[in-house]
Image (cartoon, rainbow, N blue to C red; front, side):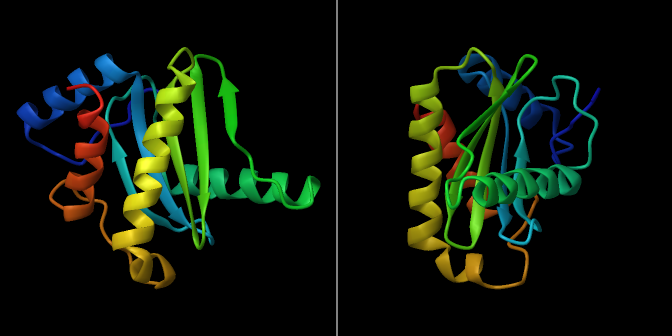
Length: 155
């Protein structure tokens, strides 16, 4: 996986995201419906990824479903692979996955996923249950609110 870009073409926005990634160790966030369909994703830093976000959403969903089947209901919490850490937070109708550095503080990851979960379940619950995508672009309200959660911890 060699390149994984933000959807923004504005270099200033991309630099801010690089700074966020350096300060937190977080590279990307994915929110997908139960079906694996991407609801939202934000790529903060490339770190050698070149896989389509839709494929990653399907993989994360499949991993979560596999663990639930094997363990009779438990969900995957974390997956460490190479220098990567994938932190999973299941929701009703959806799944959040934070991609970060393997040495990223697990308490930070847990806090951030819980904050995103709270946002989704309070303000976007109807959209989670629907079938229409919210957005995957940089100008979305959801994206701005998620970035406030991510940057609020570092400021």
